[in-house]
Length: 449
Picture 1 (cartoon, helix red, strand yellow):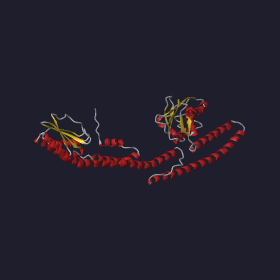
Picture 2: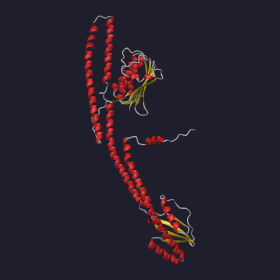
Picture 3: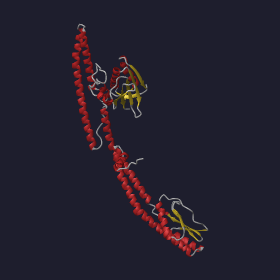
Picture 4: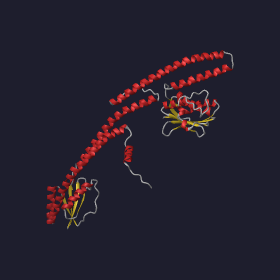
Protein backbone atom coordinates (compact mmCIF):
# COMPACT_ATOMS: atom_id res chain seq x y z
CA UNK A 1 0.00 0.00 0.00
CA UNK A 2 1.45 3.32 -1.10
CA UNK A 3 1.36 6.12 1.45
CA UNK A 4 0.50 9.63 0.28
CA UNK A 5 2.71 12.43 1.56
CA UNK A 6 0.93 15.36 3.18
CA UNK A 7 2.39 18.26 1.20
CA UNK A 8 1.89 22.00 1.84
CA UNK A 9 -0.52 22.04 -1.09
CA UNK A 10 -2.70 19.44 0.64
CA UNK A 11 -2.56 21.52 3.80
CA UNK A 12 -3.69 24.62 1.86
CA UNK A 13 -6.57 22.69 0.31
CA UNK A 14 -7.63 21.41 3.73
CA UNK A 15 -7.65 24.96 5.13
CA UNK A 16 -9.56 26.24 2.10
CA UNK A 17 -12.23 23.56 2.51
CA UNK A 18 -12.51 24.35 6.22
CA UNK A 19 -13.01 28.09 5.75
CA UNK A 20 -16.51 29.56 5.34
CA UNK A 21 -17.71 30.00 1.77
CA UNK A 22 -20.06 32.96 2.32
CA UNK A 23 -19.03 36.60 2.55
CA UNK A 24 -20.81 36.83 5.91
CA UNK A 25 -18.85 33.90 7.33
CA UNK A 26 -15.51 35.10 6.02
CA UNK A 27 -16.05 38.69 7.22
CA UNK A 28 -17.07 37.41 10.65
CA UNK A 29 -14.00 35.19 10.74
CA UNK A 30 -11.73 38.12 9.83
CA UNK A 31 -13.10 40.18 12.72
CA UNK A 32 -13.79 37.58 15.40
CA UNK A 33 -10.73 35.36 14.96
CA UNK A 34 -8.13 38.08 15.78
CA UNK A 35 -10.22 39.25 18.74
CA UNK A 36 -10.56 35.70 20.04
CA UNK A 37 -6.84 35.03 19.60
CA UNK A 38 -6.00 38.26 21.40
CA UNK A 39 -8.34 37.36 24.28
CA UNK A 40 -6.81 33.89 24.54
CA UNK A 41 -3.30 35.34 24.50
CA UNK A 42 -4.17 37.91 27.18
CA UNK A 43 -5.81 35.24 29.33
CA UNK A 44 -2.83 32.94 28.92
CA UNK A 45 -0.40 35.71 29.89
CA UNK A 46 -2.57 36.62 32.86
CA UNK A 47 -2.65 33.06 34.18
CA UNK A 48 1.00 32.39 33.42
CA UNK A 49 2.48 35.64 34.67
CA UNK A 50 0.05 36.72 37.39
CA UNK A 51 -2.44 34.14 38.58
CA UNK A 52 0.01 31.27 38.90
CA UNK A 53 2.58 33.49 40.60
CA UNK A 54 0.05 34.77 43.12
CA UNK A 55 -1.31 31.28 43.72
CA UNK A 56 2.18 29.91 44.23
CA UNK A 57 2.99 32.58 46.81
CA UNK A 58 -0.31 32.08 48.63
CA UNK A 59 0.31 28.32 48.73
CA UNK A 60 3.79 28.88 50.12
CA UNK A 61 2.40 31.13 52.83
CA UNK A 62 -0.32 28.62 53.78
CA UNK A 63 2.18 25.74 53.77
CA UNK A 64 4.44 27.75 56.10
CA UNK A 65 1.56 28.35 58.55
CA UNK A 66 0.63 24.65 58.44
CA UNK A 67 4.24 23.66 59.08
CA UNK A 68 4.42 26.08 62.02
CA UNK A 69 1.24 24.63 63.50
CA UNK A 70 2.48 21.04 63.15
CA UNK A 71 5.88 21.84 64.59
CA UNK A 72 4.32 23.73 67.49
CA UNK A 73 2.12 20.74 68.32
CA UNK A 74 5.04 18.33 68.09
CA UNK A 75 7.01 20.49 70.55
CA UNK A 76 4.23 20.08 73.14
CA UNK A 77 1.59 17.47 72.21
CA UNK A 78 -0.41 17.93 75.41
CA UNK A 79 -4.17 18.66 75.17
CA UNK A 80 -3.75 22.03 76.87
CA UNK A 81 -1.04 23.07 74.41
CA UNK A 82 -3.20 21.86 71.52
CA UNK A 83 -6.10 23.97 72.76
CA UNK A 84 -3.89 27.09 73.01
CA UNK A 85 -2.42 26.37 69.55
CA UNK A 86 -5.87 25.95 68.01
CA UNK A 87 -7.10 29.20 69.55
CA UNK A 88 -4.01 31.12 68.43
CA UNK A 89 -4.22 29.72 64.86
CA UNK A 90 -7.91 30.65 64.68
CA UNK A 91 -7.36 34.24 65.79
CA UNK A 92 -4.07 35.03 64.06
CA UNK A 93 -4.03 32.85 60.97
CA UNK A 94 -7.73 32.06 60.32
CA UNK A 95 -6.91 28.36 60.49
CA UNK A 96 -9.14 25.78 62.15
CA UNK A 97 -7.00 23.08 63.86
CA UNK A 98 -8.29 19.83 65.32
CA UNK A 99 -6.53 16.66 66.47
CA UNK A 100 -8.11 13.38 65.36
CA UNK A 101 -6.52 10.74 67.64
CA UNK A 102 -5.83 7.33 66.15
CA UNK A 103 -6.85 8.35 62.66
CA UNK A 104 -4.93 7.73 59.42
CA UNK A 105 -4.69 9.82 56.29
CA UNK A 106 -7.39 9.23 53.63
CA UNK A 107 -6.44 7.33 50.51
CA UNK A 108 -6.77 9.27 47.23
CA UNK A 109 -8.65 12.52 46.53
CA UNK A 110 -11.08 13.93 44.02
CA UNK A 111 -9.59 15.57 40.95
CA UNK A 112 -9.67 19.35 40.75
CA UNK A 113 -10.59 20.85 37.34
CA UNK A 114 -7.93 23.48 38.05
CA UNK A 115 -5.04 21.06 38.49
CA UNK A 116 -2.58 23.91 38.76
CA UNK A 117 -4.03 24.70 42.19
CA UNK A 118 -3.40 21.21 43.53
CA UNK A 119 0.10 21.10 42.03
CA UNK A 120 1.04 24.43 43.59
CA UNK A 121 -0.27 23.51 47.06
CA UNK A 122 1.22 20.02 46.94
CA UNK A 123 4.62 21.39 45.98
CA UNK A 124 4.53 23.97 48.79
CA UNK A 125 3.43 21.44 51.46
CA UNK A 126 6.09 18.95 50.34
CA UNK A 127 8.79 21.59 50.76
CA UNK A 128 7.60 22.67 54.21
CA UNK A 129 6.49 19.42 55.84
CA UNK A 130 8.51 16.34 56.71
CA UNK A 131 5.47 14.34 57.84
CA UNK A 132 3.00 12.64 55.47
CA UNK A 133 0.09 14.87 54.46
CA UNK A 134 -3.15 14.85 52.48
CA UNK A 135 -5.32 17.68 51.23
CA UNK A 136 -8.56 18.28 49.30
CA UNK A 137 -9.47 21.50 47.49
CA UNK A 138 -12.87 20.38 46.18
CA UNK A 139 -14.79 19.09 49.21
CA UNK A 140 -15.78 22.48 50.65
CA UNK A 141 -16.60 25.54 48.51
CA UNK A 142 -14.94 28.04 50.89
CA UNK A 143 -12.23 25.96 52.58
CA UNK A 144 -9.24 23.76 51.85
CA UNK A 145 -9.00 20.56 53.89
CA UNK A 146 -5.38 19.72 54.92
CA UNK A 147 -4.44 16.76 57.06
CA UNK A 148 -1.00 15.91 58.48
CA UNK A 149 0.02 12.57 60.04
CA UNK A 150 1.50 12.82 63.54
CA UNK A 151 2.29 10.20 66.17
CA UNK A 152 -1.00 10.67 68.04
CA UNK A 153 -3.17 10.57 64.87
CA UNK A 154 -4.01 13.24 62.30
CA UNK A 155 -4.04 17.01 62.61
CA UNK A 156 -6.86 18.38 60.45
CA UNK A 157 -6.53 21.96 59.27
CA UNK A 158 -9.32 23.87 57.50
CA UNK A 159 -7.96 26.96 55.75
CA UNK A 160 -9.96 29.61 53.86
CA UNK A 161 -9.78 29.00 50.12
CA UNK A 162 -8.47 32.48 49.37
CA UNK A 163 -5.41 31.67 51.50
CA UNK A 164 -4.45 28.81 49.14
CA UNK A 165 -4.85 30.48 45.74
CA UNK A 166 -6.23 33.58 44.00
CA UNK A 167 -9.99 33.07 43.91
CA UNK A 168 -10.79 36.02 41.64
CA UNK A 169 -9.15 34.58 38.54
CA UNK A 170 -12.44 33.23 37.21
CA UNK A 171 -13.87 36.77 37.35
CA UNK A 172 -11.22 37.90 34.90
CA UNK A 173 -11.94 34.94 32.63
CA UNK A 174 -15.67 35.68 32.84
CA UNK A 175 -15.17 39.31 31.84
CA UNK A 176 -12.94 38.29 28.95
CA UNK A 177 -15.54 35.79 27.75
CA UNK A 178 -18.37 38.31 28.05
CA UNK A 179 -16.31 40.89 26.16
CA UNK A 180 -15.59 38.39 23.37
CA UNK A 181 -19.26 37.44 23.08
CA UNK A 182 -20.31 41.10 23.08
CA UNK A 183 -17.83 42.01 20.36
CA UNK A 184 -18.92 38.98 18.34
CA UNK A 185 -22.59 39.96 18.62
CA UNK A 186 -21.83 43.51 17.49
CA UNK A 187 -19.74 42.19 14.60
CA UNK A 188 -22.55 39.84 13.55
CA UNK A 189 -25.08 42.69 13.51
CA UNK A 190 -22.88 45.02 11.46
CA UNK A 191 -21.64 42.37 9.03
CA UNK A 192 -25.13 40.96 8.56
CA UNK A 193 -26.40 44.44 7.74
CA UNK A 194 -23.69 44.84 5.09
CA UNK A 195 -24.10 41.41 3.50
CA UNK A 196 -27.89 41.78 3.36
CA UNK A 197 -27.52 44.60 0.83
CA UNK A 198 -25.31 42.37 -1.34
CA UNK A 199 -27.86 39.56 -1.10
CA UNK A 200 -30.61 41.97 -2.20
CA UNK A 201 -28.52 43.03 -5.17
CA UNK A 202 -27.86 39.40 -6.12
CA UNK A 203 -31.55 38.57 -5.76
CA UNK A 204 -32.55 41.54 -7.95
CA UNK A 205 -30.01 40.52 -10.60
CA UNK A 206 -31.29 36.93 -10.52
CA UNK A 207 -34.90 38.09 -10.84
CA UNK A 208 -34.00 40.32 -13.76
CA UNK A 209 -32.24 37.40 -15.45
CA UNK A 210 -35.46 35.39 -15.08
CA UNK A 211 -37.55 38.23 -16.48
CA UNK A 212 -39.09 39.16 -13.12
CA UNK A 213 -39.29 42.89 -12.44
CA UNK A 214 -38.32 43.97 -8.93
CA UNK A 215 -39.46 47.61 -8.63
CA UNK A 216 -39.00 47.64 -4.85
CA UNK A 217 -35.22 47.19 -5.11
CA UNK A 218 -33.24 50.21 -3.91
CA UNK A 219 -29.50 50.57 -3.30
CA UNK A 220 -28.50 49.92 0.33
CA UNK A 221 -25.36 49.29 2.32
CA UNK A 222 -21.81 50.60 2.01
CA UNK A 223 -20.79 53.09 -0.66
CA UNK A 224 -19.17 50.44 -2.85
CA UNK A 225 -22.27 48.22 -2.66
CA UNK A 226 -24.51 51.19 -3.54
CA UNK A 227 -22.25 51.99 -6.49
CA UNK A 228 -22.62 48.41 -7.72
CA UNK A 229 -26.40 48.62 -7.22
CA UNK A 230 -26.62 51.90 -9.17
CA UNK A 231 -24.52 50.36 -11.96
CA UNK A 232 -26.87 47.36 -12.02
CA UNK A 233 -29.95 49.60 -12.23
CA UNK A 234 -28.38 51.58 -15.08
CA UNK A 235 -27.49 48.36 -16.90
CA UNK A 236 -31.00 47.02 -16.31
CA UNK A 237 -32.51 50.22 -17.73
CA UNK A 238 -30.31 50.04 -20.84
CA UNK A 239 -31.13 46.38 -21.42
CA UNK A 240 -34.84 46.97 -20.89
CA UNK A 241 -34.76 49.92 -23.28
CA UNK A 242 -33.00 47.77 -25.88
CA UNK A 243 -35.59 44.99 -25.42
CA UNK A 244 -38.45 47.47 -25.76
CA UNK A 245 -36.95 48.95 -28.91
CA UNK A 246 -36.38 45.50 -30.37
CA UNK A 247 -39.93 44.43 -29.55
CA UNK A 248 -41.34 47.58 -31.16
CA UNK A 249 -39.17 47.03 -34.22
CA UNK A 250 -40.27 43.41 -34.49
CA UNK A 251 -43.91 44.39 -34.16
CA UNK A 252 -43.47 46.85 -37.02
CA UNK A 253 -41.65 44.26 -39.14
CA UNK A 254 -44.37 41.73 -38.37
CA UNK A 255 -47.06 44.15 -39.45
CA UNK A 256 -45.18 45.21 -42.59
CA UNK A 257 -44.50 41.61 -43.65
CA UNK A 258 -47.90 40.19 -42.85
CA UNK A 259 -49.73 42.81 -44.92
CA UNK A 260 -48.17 41.84 -48.30
CA UNK A 261 -48.36 38.16 -47.34
CA UNK A 262 -52.07 38.55 -46.71
CA UNK A 263 -52.52 40.24 -50.10
CA UNK A 264 -50.60 37.47 -51.84
CA UNK A 265 -52.66 34.79 -50.08
CA UNK A 266 -55.84 36.60 -51.12
CA UNK A 267 -54.70 36.86 -54.74
CA UNK A 268 -53.75 33.19 -54.80
CA UNK A 269 -57.13 32.27 -53.35
CA UNK A 270 -58.86 34.17 -56.15
CA UNK A 271 -56.57 32.82 -58.88
CA UNK A 272 -57.36 29.74 -60.92
CA UNK A 273 -56.22 26.52 -59.30
CA UNK A 274 -53.12 24.89 -60.72
CA UNK A 275 -49.80 23.24 -59.84
CA UNK A 276 -47.94 26.55 -59.67
CA UNK A 277 -50.70 28.03 -57.52
CA UNK A 278 -50.34 25.20 -55.00
CA UNK A 279 -46.56 25.58 -54.89
CA UNK A 280 -46.86 29.31 -54.25
CA UNK A 281 -49.32 28.65 -51.42
CA UNK A 282 -46.81 26.26 -49.83
CA UNK A 283 -44.07 28.89 -50.16
CA UNK A 284 -46.28 31.52 -48.52
CA UNK A 285 -47.18 29.15 -45.68
CA UNK A 286 -43.49 28.40 -45.15
CA UNK A 287 -42.66 32.13 -45.16
CA UNK A 288 -45.40 32.81 -42.62
CA UNK A 289 -44.17 29.98 -40.40
CA UNK A 290 -40.60 31.25 -40.63
CA UNK A 291 -41.67 34.79 -39.65
CA UNK A 292 -43.54 33.39 -36.64
CA UNK A 293 -40.44 31.42 -35.60
CA UNK A 294 -38.14 34.43 -35.94
CA UNK A 295 -40.48 36.65 -33.94
CA UNK A 296 -40.95 34.05 -31.20
CA UNK A 297 -37.18 33.58 -30.88
CA UNK A 298 -36.37 37.31 -30.82
CA UNK A 299 -39.35 38.46 -28.73
CA UNK A 300 -39.28 35.74 -26.08
CA UNK A 301 -41.92 35.61 -23.34
CA UNK A 302 -40.35 38.02 -20.83
CA UNK A 303 -43.51 40.04 -20.29
CA UNK A 304 -45.60 37.10 -19.09
CA UNK A 305 -46.35 36.87 -15.37
CA UNK A 306 -45.34 33.87 -13.28
CA UNK A 307 -48.13 31.47 -12.28
CA UNK A 308 -48.30 28.28 -10.26
CA UNK A 309 -49.81 25.61 -12.51
CA UNK A 310 -50.28 21.84 -12.60
CA UNK A 311 -47.76 20.45 -15.06
CA UNK A 312 -49.85 17.39 -15.98
CA UNK A 313 -52.54 19.47 -17.71
CA UNK A 314 -49.96 21.54 -19.59
CA UNK A 315 -48.10 18.43 -20.79
CA UNK A 316 -51.35 16.78 -21.91
CA UNK A 317 -52.26 19.89 -23.88
CA UNK A 318 -48.83 19.97 -25.55
CA UNK A 319 -49.00 16.25 -26.35
CA UNK A 320 -52.21 16.69 -28.36
CA UNK A 321 -50.24 18.31 -31.19
CA UNK A 322 -47.93 15.31 -31.42
CA UNK A 323 -50.91 12.97 -31.41
CA UNK A 324 -52.45 14.86 -34.31
CA UNK A 325 -49.12 14.58 -36.12
CA UNK A 326 -49.42 10.79 -35.96
CA UNK A 327 -47.00 10.02 -33.12
CA UNK A 328 -47.77 7.79 -30.16
CA UNK A 329 -47.35 9.79 -26.94
CA UNK A 330 -47.25 8.44 -23.37
CA UNK A 331 -47.40 10.93 -20.49
CA UNK A 332 -46.19 10.03 -17.00
CA UNK A 333 -46.69 12.87 -14.51
CA UNK A 334 -48.18 13.32 -11.07
CA UNK A 335 -51.49 15.20 -11.40
CA UNK A 336 -50.66 17.14 -8.22
CA UNK A 337 -47.17 18.23 -9.35
CA UNK A 338 -47.03 22.02 -9.62
CA UNK A 339 -44.46 24.61 -10.64
CA UNK A 340 -44.22 28.40 -10.73
CA UNK A 341 -43.70 29.20 -14.42
CA UNK A 342 -44.81 31.39 -17.31
CA UNK A 343 -47.44 29.06 -18.76
CA UNK A 344 -47.37 30.25 -22.37
CA UNK A 345 -43.58 30.33 -22.52
CA UNK A 346 -43.21 26.86 -21.01
CA UNK A 347 -45.97 25.56 -23.27
CA UNK A 348 -44.10 26.83 -26.33
CA UNK A 349 -40.81 25.31 -25.14
CA UNK A 350 -42.37 21.89 -24.42
CA UNK A 351 -44.30 22.05 -27.68
CA UNK A 352 -41.06 22.59 -29.58
CA UNK A 353 -39.45 19.60 -27.85
CA UNK A 354 -42.45 17.29 -28.24
CA UNK A 355 -43.10 18.25 -31.89
CA UNK A 356 -39.40 17.87 -32.63
CA UNK A 357 -39.60 14.34 -31.18
CA UNK A 358 -42.79 13.67 -33.18
CA UNK A 359 -41.10 14.68 -36.44
CA UNK A 360 -38.14 12.35 -35.94
CA UNK A 361 -39.72 9.48 -34.02
CA UNK A 362 -42.90 7.44 -33.82
CA UNK A 363 -43.08 6.85 -30.06
CA UNK A 364 -42.70 9.60 -27.47
CA UNK A 365 -42.59 9.46 -23.68
CA UNK A 366 -43.05 12.64 -21.64
CA UNK A 367 -42.51 12.48 -17.87
CA UNK A 368 -42.40 15.05 -15.09
CA UNK A 369 -41.18 14.58 -11.52
CA UNK A 370 -39.96 16.61 -8.56
CA UNK A 371 -36.19 16.78 -8.12
CA UNK A 372 -34.54 15.79 -4.86
CA UNK A 373 -32.51 19.02 -4.87
CA UNK A 374 -35.66 21.07 -5.44
CA UNK A 375 -37.60 22.09 -8.53
CA UNK A 376 -39.03 19.88 -11.25
CA UNK A 377 -37.63 17.89 -14.17
CA UNK A 378 -39.51 17.27 -17.42
CA UNK A 379 -38.13 14.59 -19.77
CA UNK A 380 -39.04 14.07 -23.44
CA UNK A 381 -37.84 10.77 -25.02
CA UNK A 382 -38.25 9.58 -28.62
CA UNK A 383 -37.19 6.57 -30.68
CA UNK A 384 -35.81 8.58 -33.61
CA UNK A 385 -32.30 8.55 -35.08
CA UNK A 386 -30.92 10.72 -32.28
CA UNK A 387 -27.96 13.12 -32.36
CA UNK A 388 -24.26 12.32 -31.84
CA UNK A 389 -23.07 13.32 -28.37
CA UNK A 390 -20.50 15.74 -29.77
CA UNK A 391 -23.31 17.66 -31.51
CA UNK A 392 -25.58 18.18 -28.51
CA UNK A 393 -24.53 21.79 -27.91
CA UNK A 394 -24.59 22.56 -31.63
CA UNK A 395 -28.27 21.56 -31.67
CA UNK A 396 -29.08 24.53 -29.40
CA UNK A 397 -27.52 27.06 -31.73
CA UNK A 398 -30.01 29.24 -33.58
CA UNK A 399 -30.70 28.26 -37.22
CA UNK A 400 -28.67 25.05 -36.86
CA UNK A 401 -30.73 22.13 -38.18
CA UNK A 402 -28.17 19.28 -38.05
CA UNK A 403 -29.40 17.99 -41.41
CA UNK A 404 -26.78 15.26 -41.54
CA UNK A 405 -27.93 13.82 -38.20
CA UNK A 406 -31.72 14.29 -38.21
CA UNK A 407 -34.27 14.22 -40.99
CA UNK A 408 -35.00 17.44 -42.82
CA UNK A 409 -37.90 19.40 -41.38
CA UNK A 410 -39.48 21.28 -44.25
CA UNK A 411 -41.05 23.92 -42.05
CA UNK A 412 -38.31 24.18 -39.44
CA UNK A 413 -35.71 26.93 -39.34
CA UNK A 414 -33.51 25.50 -36.56
CA UNK A 415 -34.98 27.53 -33.68
CA UNK A 416 -37.01 24.94 -31.75
CA UNK A 417 -34.28 23.84 -29.30
CA UNK A 418 -32.86 27.36 -29.08
CA UNK A 419 -36.28 28.71 -28.03
CA UNK A 420 -36.75 25.85 -25.53
CA UNK A 421 -33.39 26.52 -23.87
CA UNK A 422 -34.00 30.27 -23.85
CA UNK A 423 -37.35 29.76 -22.09
CA UNK A 424 -35.87 27.32 -19.54
CA UNK A 425 -32.96 29.61 -18.73
CA UNK A 426 -35.39 32.50 -18.45
CA UNK A 427 -37.02 30.52 -15.62
CA UNK A 428 -33.63 29.95 -13.97
CA UNK A 429 -33.31 26.38 -15.28
CA UNK A 430 -31.85 24.76 -18.38
CA UNK A 431 -32.42 22.21 -21.15
CA UNK A 432 -29.92 19.42 -21.79
CA UNK A 433 -29.77 16.57 -24.30
CA UNK A 434 -28.85 12.94 -23.72
CA UNK A 435 -29.22 9.48 -25.21
CA UNK A 436 -32.74 8.15 -24.74
CA UNK A 437 -33.40 4.63 -23.41
CA UNK A 438 -35.78 4.34 -26.37
CA UNK A 439 -32.83 4.67 -28.75
CA UNK A 440 -33.40 8.24 -29.87
CA UNK A 441 -32.92 11.61 -28.21
CA UNK A 442 -33.75 12.65 -24.65
CA UNK A 443 -34.43 16.30 -23.84
CA UNK A 444 -34.43 17.17 -20.13
CA UNK A 445 -35.99 20.43 -18.91
CA UNK A 446 -34.95 21.39 -15.38
CA UNK A 447 -36.84 24.17 -13.63
CA UNK A 448 -36.08 25.62 -10.18
CA UNK A 449 -38.49 25.26 -7.28
